[in-house]
Image (cartoon, rainbow, N blue to C red; front, top):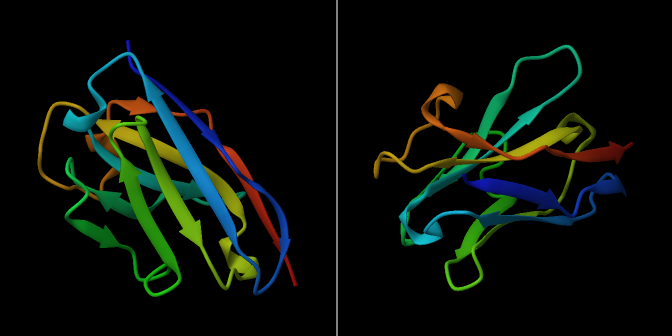
Amino acid sequence: QVQLVESGGGLVQAGGSLRLSCSASGGTFSTFVMAWFRQAPGKEREFVVVINRSGGTTLYADSGEGRFTVSRDNARNTVYLQMNNLKPEDTAVYYCAADRANSAIRTRAGAYEYWGQGTQVTVSA
């Protein structure tokens, strides 16, 4: 069974930075397509970024383009999300997700079989 554990969330002022981590266990991490999603109170879960198995291909939502950077370390079974120039509208619970069954990068939450418990990111104005 694949397990994902996020960390690195917290409270930061607008313009600040955070680095989220997601550590995986229970499978061959290098075969997972990994993604980050977020969910703000009262809103649906939304796609943030996806990274392919090797880390060579990424796709960002417009909201994070130019501010967020995703990376992965397959030797450490970990995917990272570096978030810079944070805005109050980035406030949400951030989830990492894994797709073990497919190699294509996908933005739909339903494509991902495994999810972490989430980490809260709060950006104050």
